[in-house]
Length: 522
Ligand SMILES: *Cc1c(COP(=O)(O)O)cnc(C)c1O
Image (cartoon, rainbow, N blue to C red):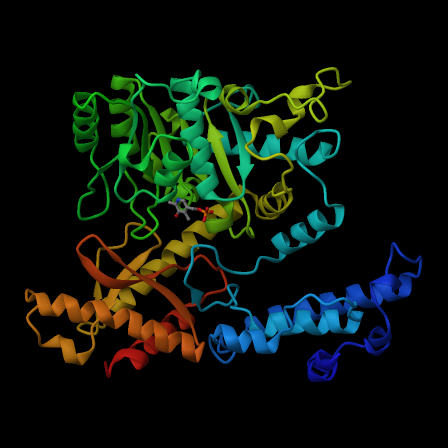
């Protein structure tokens, strides 16, 4: 293959020459020859180690040679599937190239997304998970992983104050989901089933007018859940948050009454612990009171901020969480666990099972020789399910409760350092809001804008164009990555998130300098 010679140089440090002649047929299980399998696996681990080491040299690029065009990537890879097999050497060469061209989300200067960093414990968890390739749906094929999941979910419910130690396994329920969006879908599904159990069988019949009330800053997945579940996005009523991004209980109540006047019955209220952009925490305790008054399901989306429960210093941000109906909490965001790992927690023990159970006879035989409640598959919206629990469990065991408390506190300290550093750099940097959590939202103001009257519409129009231009230059250089967005009446601004423990104060200063460097002439 022509790519062999092209890629040969890149796989230089691995003693893989004899893999040139070998194919998948030289690996176990086609042959009992352990030698090729070993060489191949060691070479892979060696490659991964070099990747991780290089990524953690802080001045190395986040994207080598910057983000390229689709045409360029298509030229670098032969994506087409051919009739013939390629050699094991070429497999490694392709992997090497993938690591070369990838956007390094584990890099200390990748602050573009909420999931960041490379966590070695998580990595090991994923390698073991993949090696055993188990399936979560039944106890009989994943006994230990199912017990592990049961125990960790119970521990998380205890973090919420939903149960005491004695009744840990009995109080409430939960499931690991592929992401926060799916966890939120579970929430709306559970609430819909709780309010209207007949919909499972008959669909939404005339006469029912279900509606949802959420904060306008809720994650978009709540609206999508309404679309998927037949509620309709028109029947999701949004409440405007205040300037700091929080909705008030009064406004939520007003909206519920408004829906009732229109003839709708509100079965679901959704709020957020740690909004995606601002990092704001809605006042759970106050909203619990409103939901109890009208007997409405209250879901808190803590995909991002749920981990604040891990530190005694930040726990108060979720005050009232002990009284809600359901909760989304993503370990793959603030707990450094690798994608995918999200949890959906629910205080009602049987609702998940009742809402989703289909009794597939070939999987969930009722006459099994063990306790069939350990077969978690029938309470999910999946059939087979990936083992996401091992990396989370290993990570939590490795750190202990204490280690995660320190992790959250250190990240908050870094966010504060970020905030203080840019506050000192007025008029080039300006905050959008004072950070309520780890999110630092700010504008870069180039000199060309510094003397323009901020009340002129022209000012916002021009400011709106600054962040995208800086981002474009950043991606071309590949030096760092930070996200930007508009929100409400605010023109485009940057949102810096540091959830990678490898990001240092020097990185923060370097990134702020970089933004200035990229933007001052605009
Ligand atoms: C990220 C996020 C989600 C979605 O989580 P995924 O794991 O990406 O599906 C949902 N809600 C909030 C508040 C989030 O920040």
